[in-house]
Length: 301
Ligand code: R5P
Image 1 (cartoon, rainbow, N blue to C red):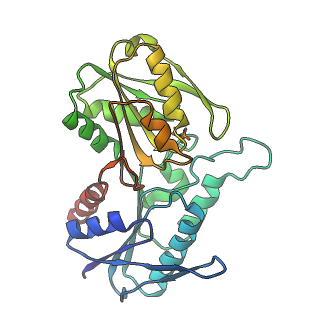
Image 2: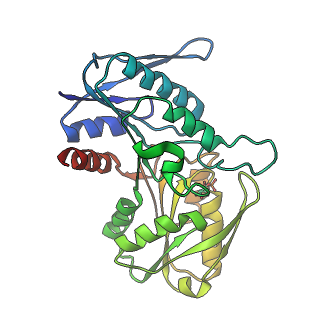
Image 3: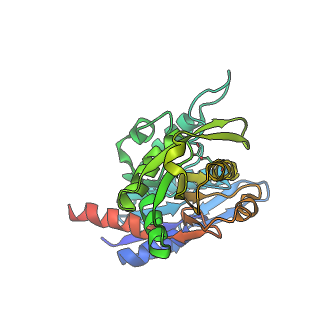
């Protein structure tokens, strides 16, 4: 049975590339907005009995993209797709993973419950923000495959720069997982993480945990998300105060909200790179081959 790859309105760049690698046919899901703001979704091909891979990325317009994804997944089931795999390159609402103040919604739980309610054989995502929920299966069950783009981003930096004596830095506690992966890819470079305290949605305070390790070295700063850029700006400031040399920044999801790109450019970094889970001016690493490797590896088993 041939595989059909379908791209949602923020997933066609990854979906199309994935279809080329898999030798599958590709179609854009038809998505339109009604005058009242509601969404219209139509699957433009017969999927009955087919193996379907639906690709989207739910950043920047998370609410519309979630509804678009819900409508698409349910329709694929209604239309009799034999198997449904979904690549949700960026899953939103993961950072509100606790009730920090009385009365708040624990959005990560609510959104994962909704996504889990659709019949999907496998969900692939990238570097899901995991802080208080350490294991993605706590949120999404066994069907979720949490891939990483950090290894490919670190490789990109090592192939394009002479990194020399560098240290890998994560800006906060949960970034240790990504700092470890980048360090492995960079031949076992030392890594450390910073202490970050969030003051508001846009302001953070960052302090070094291990000042001696970073002094005088080049720093490769890795994180899952760049949203407002506040975390990167404050971390670079703290690192420079400690006397680091060149600074390279790599993040999986370049959301770049609220003029973040302009703020980051002014930091005069040696390089600033992200994957294309969210298309941006710094998206240099493609994630479609990573998904394809996983899908093909699974099929061979
Ligand atoms: C949060 O803990 C994440 O890992 C990122 O560090 C954070 O989301 C980045 O956000 P911003 O760019 O707004 O500081």
